[in-house]
Image 1: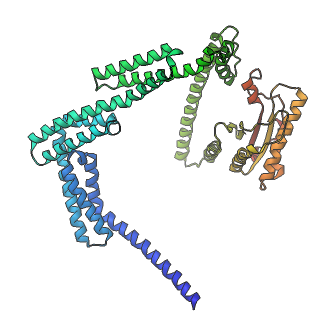
Image 2: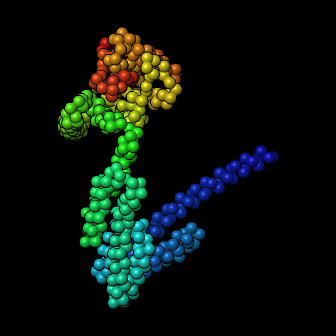
Image 3: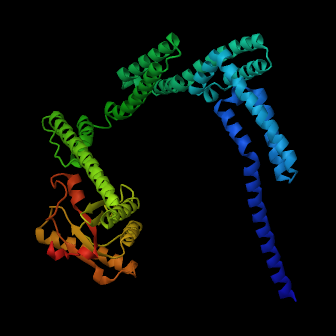
Length: 484
């Protein structure tokens, strides 16, 4: 008997839930039927900013609209709901009409309000903004009531309040933070180490304040000046931190100079250049600029080629459609691109690079590092290798080649042996953690130092050359590593 009661209880619950879902769906359909026209009127009123320019009529409409929603929720009569909606729609139409008069009569105050809002006066001049809003709402209500003279008087008061709020917001938003930083820098005696830079910040701040006083409606110039001032004071604080140890003789001049050479050496290395600083910064700087300009040109040319290819593919697709031909080739290419983007999004920029090699996908886990002379995978890299497994699963019907590479330091034979051992370690890890991956579908090969991708004369270049590459090859075009 108790079993029957429990089963009956479950059935009753299911029926009640089903009834509730059906009731909610029916209520949604009813709402859509009843509210559509009023919702359209509400949208038109919001676009006309009736809540601001015609607050009296808009408030009446809002009250009637809320009453209709409440009655719908409580299951009141359709006629009663329709009556409220008719009242709301009528008030909304009146509100839209009132905004037309407000846009003509309260023009200056409306512009002042927009300018104050753009300066974020709500946040940076809260009190002035609230007072201006109250005065403006009063002017708009007076205008709706037909008292034009009183509306204009209150509108003038609102305009002045909005202008004051705007100026206060501009100063707070653009100048106060910089002024605070300058005070902080002076307290820290930054002027002892970077007096020129700090003085420049103060001068720029003064120019920004003067520009605001001269024309508070042109905020572009003072904003730019204030931004520069903020940068210079932060720059001065940085210089003080760097120069203080030199002045206090905690760091030698030679060490300071060498530390300042390090960034340009690093930048040059990332561009596969050798920064030789025996004659100063000019030569490596020019070499870096030249390389960057060449890369920009190559990037532009590549973009142009891609655009041309895209146009040709579209033309081909259009032609095939005209001929009634289904393009399996283009569909396969698009599927390949989608999978590539899926793999690419799996890794962070410091974890792996994902490249294409014709129909193959190359995953280069740059975040995977081996200890010197070792082929053991540390546990901290397991999470990265799990992402490599996810990438392999995107192409389930593929052959995997794990390639090991080294830099040019060390003997050729030693490097070849080490690269093979590391590639084999990654292969074994993948097989141990991917039970659905046949051993015959994964091979490892070491290339030693024979296939560098960067300059072995730089620290950065050698780091790039010490790598593992995981090549994912479609089985339809499999070639073993030995056939490369």
